[in-house]
Image (cartoon, rainbow, N blue to C red):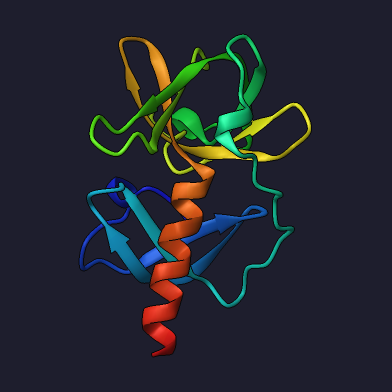
Length: 150
């Protein structure tokens, strides 16, 4: 999983895992959610437990993982500001935190102090890091994989 804005359209996709480059294919793409689901057969790793964003509290510590400015596996620490909801549905739309994100953090994990996935880092707005909530990403994966199975 990564952000849709990180996936070059029509170009061969190579991802970095453990310092090695691997081929990957895009299984699903959503510009609306800024998410892309990738398939890289040669890559595996641990699955993260998901954190329900409704349980997040302002001031709670989170960590953003990524490869900002070419620095591999960098972590930045910050605090939750809040969860922005959709104006019509009230569903969680973004997790907002004061983590420092830079180009290369997009598509990386935002995790809590227990290592649970809070969201997928997406952008910086007004100096604050913005992530797609883990449940939104999970719903995207579920819809994408159920369409492929049908």
